[in-house]
Amino acid sequence: MASEALVVVDVQNDFCPGGALAVERGDEVVPLVNRLIERFEHVVLTQDWHPAGHSSFASTHPGKAPCETVDMPYGEQTLWPDHCVQATHGAAFHEGLEWTKAELVIRKGFRKAIDSYSAFFENDHETPTGLTGYLRERGIGKLTFAGLATDYCVAFSALDARRQGFEATVMLEACRGIDLGGSLAAMTQRMREAGVVLA
Image 1 (cartoon, rainbow, N blue to C red):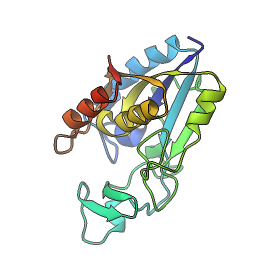
Image 2: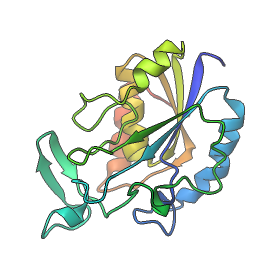
Image 3: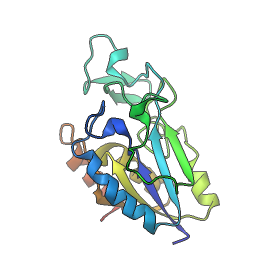
């Protein structure tokens, strides 16, 4: 297992029931993720970490509502309710998550002008988070993903893992999706086509 790592994606309060951008039944992943953490020698976490007034927040675009889209310099951006604002309760990991074993926490979305779904790249698909280099230097080539949300941050992370030459498995039972306009089926298909193992 030394050459494998578990990547736990965004198991944060704002993505769980009662949060600002709650994924339905998102908190159900917590015990499943904890069991995975026990099994893996290497654990990496991602944490959405937005400054106030982030460009992906609908509140920063007058007249726009959450789930509408806008064109950004890097492409189409879905607008979200204000969520995972740095150093707030909403940005904190779910209190039930046994995350202390993690060797690395990748914070994403902290650049005000660009959103970041993937653990590897900002949404321009060019600006790296540094995760690829970290994993390569540690000799890790096989990744398993779990967390929130299946059709956004989990899927984009798994797709980028494949693009960077890693083996990638998504533990679907330990994920929950948003399913915005059929996004769950579309991203599941994209992952399958990219060679992501859906377990």
